[in-house]
Each structure stands twice: as C-alpha cells, then as structure tokens.
Amino acid sequence: MPRTFGRQQQALASPWSDYTVLNFPDASSVGESEREPLMDAMNAIIAANWNAREPHWTAASSPFDSQYSLIAVYDGAELVAFSVYRMLRIGGRAAVYRSGTEVLPAHQGRGLYSFFTSQVLRHARETEPADASIFYGWRTRNPIVWAANAKICKKVAPSLFGNTQDATLQAAGVEMCAKLCPGKCLEIPSMIMRGAYGHIRHRRQAYRGAALLVDAAMSRIIPNSADALFSVGYMRA
Image (cartoon, rainbow, N blue to C red; front, side, top):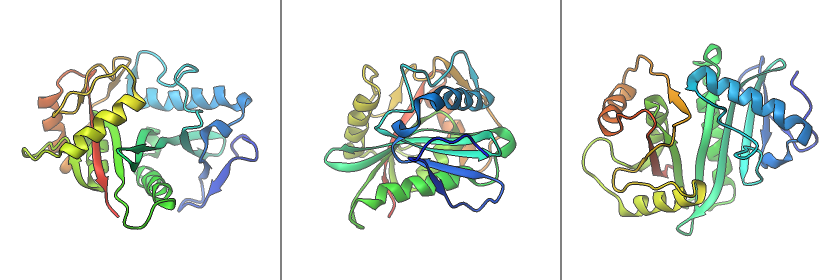
C-alpha cells in the first residue's frame, strides 16, 4: 500500500482492483514529510517519458500549492501515474488547467489518462451550473495529449486544421498564461509559448490516427523541441 498522507487524502473508486487511487482536491494537504518522496516519484515518471535535464517539479515550483489539485495512482507502494490540475477564473468564467499528467510506460494503455480526465471534468462541473461555459486549458508538445484534450472541447485555440480563430479563446489563453506562467509570453494567434520545455524534451513515438495529423502540424508550427502549444477550448457539457 502507498504511504499514509494524513486525513486529507481521499481514496477514489476506480475500474482497477490492483491500483490505489488517492485524490487531493487541495494539494497543499499533502504532509510536509511526504512531499519530497512524492515529488521525487513524480519527477521519476516524467524522466521516464521525457529526456529531462533537471527535475520538473521542485520546491520553488511545487505541485503542493493550495491552488492545485492532485490525483495519484499507486501499484502497491509504487507511484505509477499522477495528474496535477488547477481550477481558476478566466474572463469571469470557470476554467480548468491541466498542469501535468504522466503515466509510467509499463502502465500506459490501461485508460489512466482518460480516468484522470473524467475526474478533472467532474471536479470542474461540481460548483458550476449545468449549462455553464467552462474554459479548458493545457500546454504540451505531445501530439497524443493534444488530440485527447482537444476531443473533449467544442472548439480549441489554436486551430491546427484550418484558419478558424476565436478571439475569446485567444484572450482566455493570454490571461491564463499570465496567471500560470508569469513572465512567459504567448504568441497570438499561434498560441506558441517559446522555451516552455527548455529543461525537458519530449520523446517522440509512433503516432497514428488524429495524433499523426497533430504531430505533422506541430512539427511545422513548433519545430524547436523547447517550444510548446498553449491551448484553450470550450469544455463540452
């Protein structure tokens, strides 16, 4: 079993009997003594999926901030996947930002990313009217991640296929970027964030389907591996 994180942890029901899923709606509730080993395990998963020059999560850039939520999946005592996200207000609307979701290679293909997404969307809808329009944002240069997140949005900026532009989404991206990444500029209308991944480099895979098309678009738009697309969409109901 994973280590005990205190009374603030919540066990989530999941489709898997061999995993333990812990939910921290307020990531700052993770105890001080547990933060370093958990952060080390999170960085180890990132390093398994990326070529990392330095740790992504650090004490100075910590996932254990009260503004973040965290879901952690354990196989016995081993952390095998996690998702960090943040709820905020953008342009007067509710918004959710996916700060980072990673799954160890040996555990990929079991639906963990989709499970994380369902939990994040449920949290986003909990305090909003059923018909509320909610912004959904993420930053990546992984074609699979981009395609998966775009699928749950009615419309996305940037539009990788065609010239459709949405000024509201572009403005939401600029505001979201300013709140989440102070000092980082967002290029409009391309929604490119330069140098976002100077410390880690995405490991390319064999893509198929929608991800193959997204990869071709990304290779054209952001050939520099340090650059990323900062995307914002209208979340589907």
